[in-house]
Amino acid sequence: MTRLAERRRSGGASEATLKLLAELFSDYHPRDFAVRLWDGTTWDPEAGQQARFTLAVNTPAALRALLRDPDELALAEAYIYGGLDFEGDLQAVFKVADHLLVEKTWTTASRVRAARRLLSLPANGATKSPAQRARLSGRRFSLARDRQATNFHYDKSNEFFALWLDERMLYTTAYFTSETDTLEQAQDAKVDLICRKLRLRPGDRLLDIGCGWGTLVVHAAERYGAEVVGITLSEEQAKWARDWIERAGVGDRVRIEIADYRELDGSERFDKVAAVGMFEHVPHAQLDQFFGTAYRVLRPRGVFLNHAIARPLLQPPRRGRSFMDSYVYPDGELKAISVALRAAEEAGFEVRDVENLREHYPPTLREWLRRLEENREAVIRETDEASYRVFRLYLAGSIHGFSTGRLNVCQSLLAKPENGVSGLPLRRGDWYA
Image (cartoon, rainbow, N blue to C red):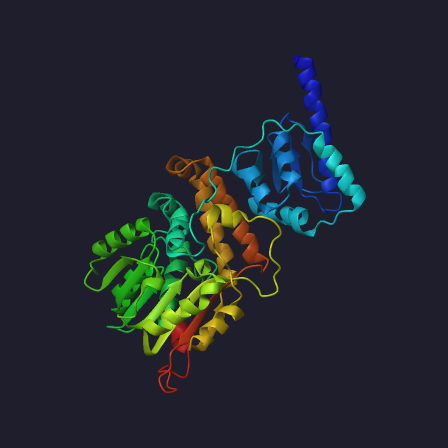
């Protein structure tokens, strides 16, 4: 093909792409984003609007692949593998994605027009195959498959997570007592709030289900004198936690085991139990087993704090394939808090307190995202470009989810009374002293 023919073909594809975009966003106002095509052609925001971000279409095939099967996963993969770029405020992208994938309604005529323009775009030069997708084997939610799912996310490397989490490697929402709190201060406040809600005392035996990198177990032993067992499925997390326990000098009161909660046989009993950010990995079908295990290992008059992301009961599920299931948390399931509490009560627990911390998650996520973006080069050296893009998209999308109320995060305090006696005080003021 001659250079003139190539230019004509590129120009035709650019023109078709702009017409297609105009069709897609004809009912989106105000359009506060710009578009830049592979040949430098630009589409400015609506008059009077500043571009919050620029959608860079690096190849016409990327747009064709996305719109051939438009869903959350197709859009994510177009970005992950470089067919599309989002330059500027990534959080603003999700409002546009909602319009395209959830809100937009199509007439028969508009579908026909869009299909004709889509078919005029070249199909060659498409994005790479999704080599980074989670590929799990075995029966869904079996012990072996759950280990694969956990390790897919958490065993990326401790050094990777250390580049953007706080210095103690906490990977759940912080607790901001002031807008001026640093992430480190807010994370310390969160861990201490959990210990106060559990009303830990010296000598209490605490089980931390899904202990992560060991922050809660060390905090509970150092500041509250508790004896702690932490369990995790991640070899990388266990190694980090054990090193930290040794440095902190609390090895006589703390131990870490690589185990699933379903492997607890009940031979050890605990005064307090906590699960912070692992309930999302428990499927609906195993709620009775999860709460039943916690109830069985807990001594009478003990309490269980479950800290978990939840979805509103009436929130409709996203249509199409899931980016989170494919690239971030394979086999993860979010439950409504009402569903979780019913399962807890059916296991024998008494619900004593529920606190929604939703507004604390966006500032936590924004700080994680800021640190990830600031450390982009180091993150890519530790992993690769696609992994950086996966986590950038995941963090920005989570900000959108919590900010719009599509996601919640709740702490539930559950008691195991003995002959009707809970052992709890009449008031909860000591939690916030």
